[in-house]
Length: 246
Image (cartoon, rainbow, N blue to C red):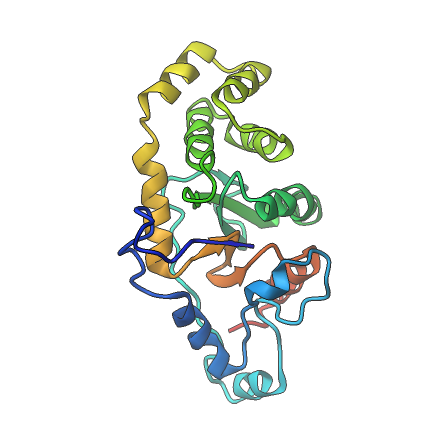
């Protein structure tokens, strides 16, 4: 998991933290629901000690007593790329960065597996959170993906970005050619910077919500922080489908 530098020298982060990450955690911890912390996510495949929404005896007792045991966050889909039916019972909104190695690993391993296992029961939404101060290619890559979105090839283009080892304008044009996009239109879109503000708007919304690291997810509004393994997402999704989470 990679975090935004919390420094006044970072022009993309300064002044945007209306709600700190601790606000999300504090809403869950008193009710015995634990959000995973960064230290646990740096080791892929490690048995998670802090899954995003994990059951405990106090939480079960509160549920039995009819109390609200978890806070859901209102995270709109906006006009961002979505994969899956609008009426799917599960919506996963991801805030991600194309240059983040943990985002890449999650996309190539967990995302693809979730698609295979749950199919149309999940709607995936991708929102941008480029950590530009440490990932100089993240913002241009996000803009390129939005240019591909114009030609209905966002998810295919995004797959290539996460599979590849290089991010550059030459690579973006190469991917556009590979996907049989109108390359002239795609290149003009890139050169114009027309999606620069769109990407920044996603970033600013996320920081105001409390997001500080990539990847961060909201599963029907329930936060999961970090590149958690498949089993963590499966547990939350299965419980959500079964109506076990208030």
